[in-house]
View 1: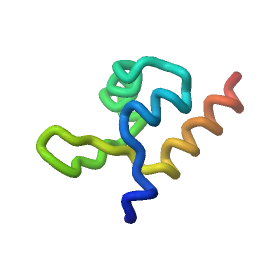
View 2: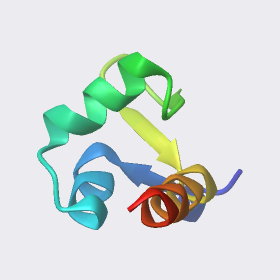
View 3: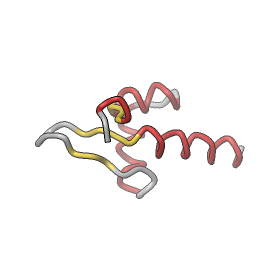
View 4: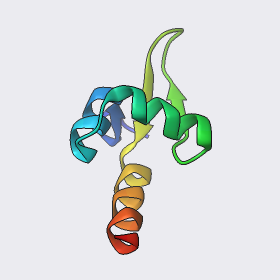
Length: 60
């Protein structure tokens, strides 16, 4: 997985227009799987984020 396929919590929040804390809650609920790249650095798979965006659009 290349670095370009990973998004920061802020980038995910910006895509959904939500607070980064909301992204963390989604992680806790199992909606997003974090990729730890350091002890304090978390990233998310771009494809998983895109899939979640699509699911949320279909549910709306």
